[in-house]
Each structure stands twice: as C-alpha cells, then as structure tokens.
Amino acid sequence: MHNYLRAIGLHQLKNNTDLDNFLFNEVIREGNLSSEFASEGGSVIREYRLKTGEGIGVCALVESFRSGRQNVSCFPYLYNPDVSTKEICIVERYTDKESLAGLTDEYKIGLSLIFFVNNPCDYRLLPDAGRQTEFRGTYLSAFCNSGTVLLPILSYEPSEDMLRKKREQDSLIEKAKNGDEEAIETLTVADMDAYSQVSKRIESEDLYSIVESSFIPCGVECDLYSVLGEITDVKSTVNTYTDDKIYKLKVVSNEIEFRLGIREADLLGVPEKGRRFKGRIWLQGRVDFTNPVLPGEE
Picture 1: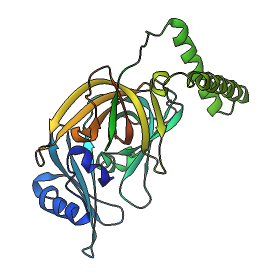
Picture 2 (picture 1 turned 90 degrees about the vertical axis):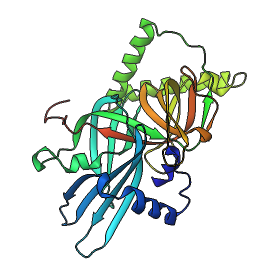
Picture 3 (picture 1 turned 120 degrees about the horizontal axis):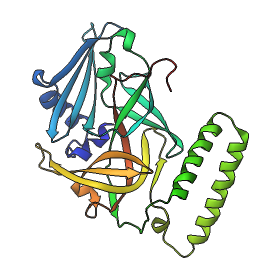
C-alpha cells in the first residue's frame, strides 16, 4: 500500500530506508497522534496522521509490544466528504496485520466491491457491544500512479424504458445471487447478446467509443481495479513537502462515485469536467462506524 505514496507526491521515497526516515522523522511525532488503544493481545497501537496537502496525507500505525518490538505500517489517505454507497458494508480484519478490509455488494457493477478501510482505529475504538461487522455508509477514495484522460463520448439522458430495464437487471442479479436458476440463465443470455454486439462493433469502432465506463478487478490483490469513468469534478492541492501538484478528481464509474488522487506528472492529459479517466487504482474507503446495521435490518 505504501507504493501509492507516490500518488500524493512522495515519489522521493524510493526504498525502505527513505520510507523509514520519513516515517520516524516526520510522521511518527507526538503532535500527529490521532488515536491510541490497547489491543486484545496486550500490545499498544498508536495511529499518527500527517497532513501533506488539503484533504490528503499519510497515516502510520505503530504497534508496540511489551518486549520493546514495534510493527510499523503506513498508507496514504484521501478525504472524501461524499457518501459513495449506502449498501451494507461488511468489515473484516486481515489475519496478519491490524488493517481492515471492507466489502459491499454493488449491483451497479455486478460484483462485490472490496476495499482497504482507511479509518481502522475508529472501528477498534468502538465499545465491544458496538463492534459489529456490518455498517451502512461508505466514502470511497482511490489512488493511481499512472492514468490517462480520455475525451467523452456522445451520451443521452436515459429514457424511462432504459431505467425500467436497469431495475429489472438489478432484480435479476439479486435473484441470481440467491440461486435462482432462471435468473442466472436470463443474465447469461443477455451477456452473450452484449458480447456478440460488441464483437461486431469493435471491427469498425474504437473500444473506448463503445465502452463508456468500466470497473474491473485487476491483478491478484483484491483492492486493485482497472477503471474507466467520467470526471465530474476537478480539484487540486500541493504537497507541502515536495511542491508536487496533486489532482483530486471526482470520478463516476458504473454509477460508483469516488475521489481519486493522482500526481499531475503521472496523469496523461488535462482533466476537465465531462472528460473520462482511465487507469489502475488502489481502492480505499472510510466506513461510517456510527451507523451499524441492526439484526434483521436489510
């Protein structure tokens, strides 16, 4: 995850020595301490957050053991003020570290969206009685080390018939997940028809004039995705340590809205509202732990 420190302008951290020097000299300071608690195993976990620009920064988690040994991990974060999804989010802890993974079923993209939770200490500070695993309300953000701006394609306002078909498709996906064989067969036939149409059009048209947006898992890590989506807002900030300009783009891909951080030097093209972004992203999210899903609630 520290590979994406580049996306917030910290590209000068080229090896573990550079990273350790930055963490212990700049991030892990008393003034940056944001959370502290004792774990079930008896160790003490401290969270430090260093702001490197407007809405962006570095978070370091330091786990100290009684023997004097310390485990240190870090990741960049980007603040997203807007709720990306209100679907139920399931939170689980990684087996080998103090980090959390979030999972939400998104019918809009037809898959389970897995992301890195960037506010894990908010969860750990909940009382045992409130430490449930399902919550509602996720603020998604992402980082990219190499992206491209594409021109938009001609689009139309969806008609009532198109909206009706979309609702029917969402219903079919829900039934298919519950094992409905007829729904599975209907979706399979629809996918085959779409594949046939695209195969014919690709012979004479450019791929990105056919595909308006996409959100596809990429690589072996579960929180990496290849995305193509519309840029709906463009903001920027400057890294106070390197003077790099960082774009904070609001991107909508397959109806999933998130904030994206990328260094200006790593983005090919000029981002503007209405244009599209294409790239491989690392997805993270801030979960609203104050809104747990109660037993029996759907």
